[in-house]
Length: 412
Image 1: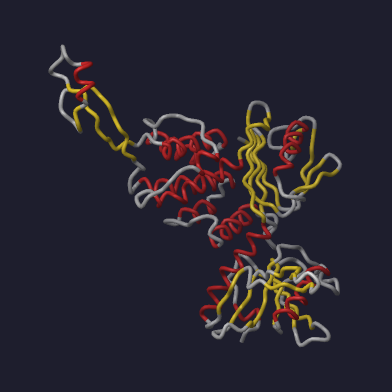
Image 2 (image 1 turned 45 degrees about the horizontal axis):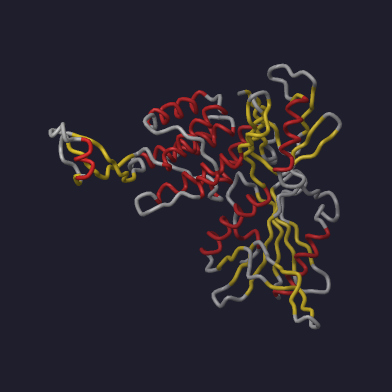
């Protein structure tokens, strides 16, 4: 499979005929992308004149034999896809969307694999770690005519089948078997991955894993099958594996074909990912200062309608900082947006500013912060005074490639 690497907001041309290595997609591939459009969130990409531009959703879109790798736009690294890929993987690991283990994920990024192979190698790494502790096995009831007594003798079947063969015993017994639905689902996902990767290392690891699942029955798995799986104390360690299996199957669109190949989408909303990434960093930093961070709350309503005795306009801040007495210290929202520091308004949307002003009034806080990724026109914090109040809004750029300090939101 050939891969094209794009940076967030980059325009991709649509051509009638595409030569190998050309940074473009064909009309047929664009048609398939159009069919997938209803599966994407609104404004995930936009159409231009014989072109398409991808917005804040990064990840992989597989269009038959062509894979589109969409990477976040990282300031100063726009011409270095490997660095942008590494930054995305760092955010995914920090936000616990990927699990770092034995340095595997970090090494994957450094080796400059395509993003699809990063996800596949990460899955293989996690699966190998669980298989080292043992494959999932379940007891299966067997009814067989054998030469030695095993389990219990089925007397009625013994008379029926073995009157002339007294050397044989018809037994019923339970046997631990690896050929169960859990392993059948894993094998199906491994085979699916083998059809969409072209990376040598990924194919090698998938081949080795498929050999370990060689005796497992081949099935066609779906999301309903994964959701019906149950776990006990011995199998609950595999839950993360099946979460990733579900992610791969959810991204598969067998009804949308390019040639004879189905399409696959594995995308992350950068706004949500950035929010989770910032929250995890600030929680650790806040804890060191004796401050508690709460995500997505506490929720409050903005207004009350007395004639109906109803509260309206729910407010749900991304991050609220509280002191030891649960008093509000500061409210922070994270936005994955491009701003313009040369503009007097910094490019901040009026809706975002009104939202923060509403937080200040309703929660009674004087410290507010809007967090954005570091960018060309916003490299240093900027303080804005909300007139008519005692509240200050600090606009803070975060470089996702560096360590962030809590002092940036001026708690000290």
